[in-house]
Length: 96
Image (cartoon, rainbow, N blue to C red):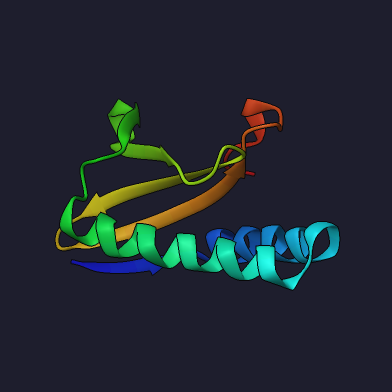
């Protein structure tokens, strides 16, 4: 399976990395990047590991870190990362 990110997901990922670098430094940012890469490798082999969050749209979610959730959809032989979401935010902002 191939993994692709939406523009929203790319933007949110970049913002989270910038925040981590500012608050905790480059080494923590690098650890976050590595954790994300490791997760993507695992997701390719086990695409249905995330819980079905929005059944009618087949949107799945999984916790990447204790503060970051990834929302994604499986479409054919592709996994589309829809967004990265800081779970401390208002849940209504998931896809904004």
